Structures are given as structure tokens and as C-alpha cells.
Figure 1 (tube, chains in turn orange, blue):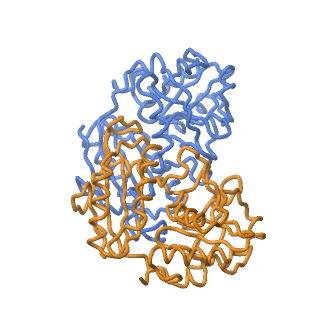
Figure 2 (cartoon, rainbow over the protein chains, first blue to last red; figure 1 turned 60 degrees about the vertical axis):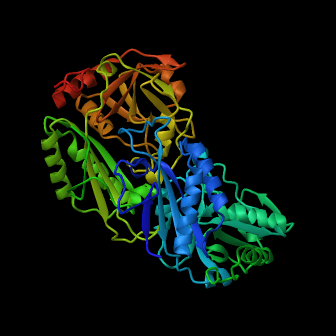
Figure 3 (cartoon, rainbow over the protein chains, first blue to last red; figure 1 turned 120 degrees about the horizontal axis):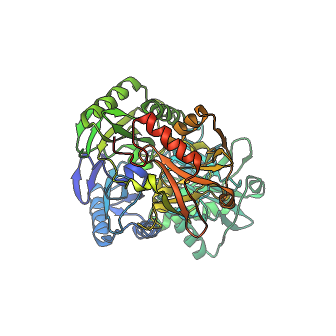
Length: 282
Length: 282
């Protein structure tokens, strides 16, 4: 899969310089896994886009057309990644937008990331980022295009770790730079509430549902670094990575892969037809 | 002046879809007034870009070339607005960037905004925005491209007010959606510190310096809505608007134009060769 771009369903090599995504990050995105010609968890990606459109008052309505476009792209590339950007359309200079200013959609295809399968089977090393997430309930949960916090957090290290944990300004554990976080404790699956910051990932919602179907108790719970001492395990997840157990949090703690984590990896594989610990080998 | 675009000094009608400004708001911008073929406060705009490049670790070095480009554009358009965007250049998918990933610069020209001169002479009506600014010291002060807070704050009203005041999550008065804020009290000029959020405007720095030259005491001071009761006046400012005295804060207070505000308007006009209260009539 080579990288290619479409704007409002037309193949392009460049985009309008007035797009408000470019000027203000005024828009949303989704990064979706394509496997065997299907967009994984397509309906959940669309649901989150809908929630984002509400929050940003983006006047997008062509959900049928977008679904069709994504399905067509998935059929074309077979296996890979589709990124969807919804940007508020170009308008005058300035922050103000019109109620019906319209939305430009950019759909691009990319190769699968080359994550080593050991990340799922053996676990990953993580660190705690120095940059703290600011609190902004109005933008929390949605996958908007204002991502400087994640960009600058990811710039804190190179290849020494696979991911960084992010705290908010109250010291609450929120997520990884590109993943959501789950903690396993006494047979209960805990994940931070994302009311004030963070991105409510599609894989996070998939796993909360799968755990529920397994009869595993799940709870959105405020977590701090000190809570990691009592954890039986933690893992990170996103749509492309699946589940990565955390092997070590630098300077703080080491973990094995908890029993719930293993169970969820197996169920997720079965659910998605993938081999556990080797996400891309189907 | 019609809107036109240049990317890295070449005239264009579109831009690369992989620009990180588009994907993450990973970049900076400046909006500069051009009058009589000169970029007003050019050196200060460049200074703020330099500070922004440090904060975002943007590897931009062609300051001579950028200066030349802006001066040339100003000569071409005579009077108008130049917007400069520095975006981290396209790279792989994901938040990570390389140390020397490079920077794409987009320079565009626009007509002057059609602000009625009464805004400067009679003052403006403002409201207090419901959206509160999140605290993020790592991004405070610089003019980065993550502007959803301003976009959503500006969407709270239509034409009923000329500007909205923004508080942070601690209830501190910070700025307007597109302006900085000054309060005049007992002959002292107060403006909020911008350590945790807000944009440190070029006009704000111009006015702090001009006030100093006039022997007026200036202080960066934490201000809350309750402090407006004791104010002798307040005003908003930016590079394009100059100084707008605030006539009323909806539901809270009314003001005349304070003596310091008048003095600063006069000095700013003299300094910039503009007629007070009629910013664009020179």
C-alpha cells in the first residue's frame, strides 16, 4: 500500500491552502485498520466522528457517502491503514465560522505500521511523559486535530521506549501518546475517565464491550501513578496496535501480562480473526 | 488585495496534504498588518516565531529569506494583511517527528479586515465566553496552530458583540478570542500574565514598551472578573485592530475610555503614522 489521498472522493496530490484544519486544527480525524478488504470497527469510527461533529459543530452529513468511500478504499488496498480527516471548509480569515460552512473530507491510505509482534506477545517498555495534558472538557474524548500535546510528548524520547504514559495537570493517569490505558486489578478492568482530556479510542470501546460480554467487571476510575503498585497488570491499546501489555514503566514498576489482558487478547483475536501476539498475521 | 498563497516562496494554489499543520496543528502562525508597503512590527513577529520554534522544536533557520519574502510581499500589496504559517514538514504517519524534519512556510496575503473605525473611537461591546481556556504552560504565549478553543469560543455568539473575553479554568481573565486584554487602574496599566495559557500578542508587547516610554507603570497581574469593578477602563488590542476600548462587558460593567487608553491610542497612532480611532485611514 502506497500513500494516496482523496479530497471529497477525488484523487488529489495537494489540498486547498485555506482548509481550517491547516490554520486552526479545526477538524477531526480517524485512523482505521484495514484487514482483508474490511475497515475494522468502521461503525465505531463513524460514531466517534459523529460525536466530534457535534462537539465542533461541524456541518457534515454525507455519512452514507463516507461509508461507501471507506469501504471502497478498503477493498482496493486489502490490508493497510485508512486515515480520514474532516476539516471545516475554507472561509474568511479569522476564527469565526458560518453555521453551514461545510466540511472537506480527506481520505488517505497508508501501509500498516511495522510494529514488531513482540510488542503484543512480550509487552512494551513505557515511560511517564513530562508534558502534562491540559484540562479541556469541551474537547475531551473526541479525536480533534489539535494534537501538539501528543506531538511534544512523543518528542521526549526516541527508540528507548515503545510508548509514553501521559498524566493530566491533576496528576491523573489518562492515556499513552497514541494509545488508551487499562489497568487490571483483582479481576476488575479499570480505565481512566476521559471527561476533561484524552481521546476515547475505538479500541478502548471495543475492549470495554468485549470485557462486558465476558462477564468481566469494568470501571472508569481515576488512576494515579501510585495506583500502579497495586495493579496486577496494565496494557495499552489502539485500533492499529490491538493490545500491548506493559512490561515496565521506567523507574517505577515491572509487570507480567495479567490474566485479563491475556484473555482479552485471545478474545480480540478470535473476534477479529487475528493471531494473538501477532496482530498482522492473519 | 486578493488572497494569494506562496509555499517556500513559490506561488501556489494548493499545498501538500501531508503537512503536519493539517494533521496535528503542528506549527505556528503570524498575522501581520501591512501599511504603506511595510510590515508593521516585523521584527516582533519574527521574534515570536523564533520563540515558537524553540517551544515546538521546529527546525527553521531561513530567517533572512523569510524577512525578504515578507518585505517583498508587503511592497507588492501596499496595504493589507500577510499571514505566515510555519508547519513542520510532511513525514511518516504518527506524532513522532525527526530532529531535522524541516519546516514548510506558507505566506499568504489578504485584504484588510473591514473593522468599523467606531470600534477604536467609541469602543466595543464584549461578552464573557463560556468556554474556559485550558492550562498548558508548554504551549502558552506562542502562536501555535492548535486554535480550537478560540474557534469554539468565537462560535458562542454572532454579531451582537465585537469580541469575547476568555477566562482560564482557574477563573483568571486571560485575553479575548483574537485580542489581548489590558486593564487601566489608578494610573497603572495591568495585563494578565500568560504563563499557563493565552497568546502573547505583538501589539501587547508594543503597548507595554510604549507605556514604559511614557513613564506609565505596567504590571503583569492576575485579574478576575471581580477586578473589573475597580477598573478605570479596559481595552483589547492586536496587530490588525490596534486598540479597542471596551464600552461594556455584557451583564457586568460599563466603561468609558480611560485616560491611559486614550494616551496610548494617540501615541500608537503617532508611532505608526495612523489616525487614532480610524486605524486604516492613513
